[in-house]
Amino acid sequence: MSDTSRQTTVDTALTDDGSGLVLTRELARVLGEPHAGADGRHNDEPSPFHDGDLVGTVSAVCTVKGLRPDAGAAGVSAIHKGAVNGPVEVSRTGIVTDKHGDRAHHGGSDKALYAMSAAEQRHWSEVLGGIEPGRLGENLLIEGDIDDVEIGAILSIGDPSNAGLRVRVTGVRNPCATFARGVGRADWVEVFSARNRVGVYLAVLTEGTVQAGDEVRVVSSPGHRVTCRRWFAHHDPRDAQALLNSEIFGNCVIAPFTKKYVRAAAHERVG
Image 1 (spheres, rainbow, N blue to C red):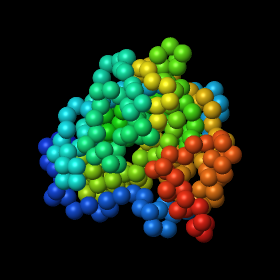
Image 2: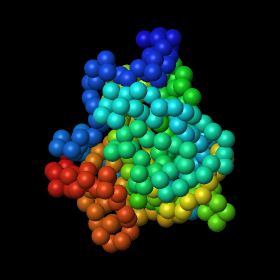
Image 3: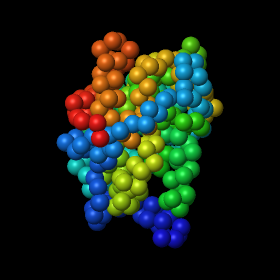
């Protein structure tokens, strides 16, 4: 497929509800599948970050540019976002100017912000023939490996004592049909998931503002070693047990949307 045809597909998706797409997969990780669709066996990949470490720097803050029609149950999607100049106000439910079309699966306090590696956004921009920041639904682009932080880690964005944010990493994106329709590709769920760097969701613990240039640092990590990338790639039962044990000992808070997958994996055989 040429870059021109890719660009046309992406542009068309802004106004096309995607009802004509025959998706090859509607959800990347599905409860009831062995290891929820992941491979089931980790390679003991550790997090490279320790308490106090710099994860990266915010390179773009994005909020909704307009709702697009969508063939899903909600009828609309707010996936089309664009970069805005900061500082931008953030509440417990996310950027105050942002919106969500499907509130049953997107947004809410446990998914207040969606952060993605800026390097991944650039990769996918090349794949899709050129897209602006925010086009994949991200609220924050981070110059750094945000997927390599542990689930449940507490991060600071900017200086929380001076209008910055304190956030908790609650889980990973589960690429879905809405996402596929948003870029106009029937195979998008599998294609986007293949690199295992799908971005992370953040709960806002301390409200404030965020802007490009803010540093993202680890305040504290649970210490269970299960990074967001590792969890998405494997859903390893041993990691599921480690996550649940970390919560029992008070080191980690597991958001409900993540816990249902953790509980499902905890008693499976190692793949």
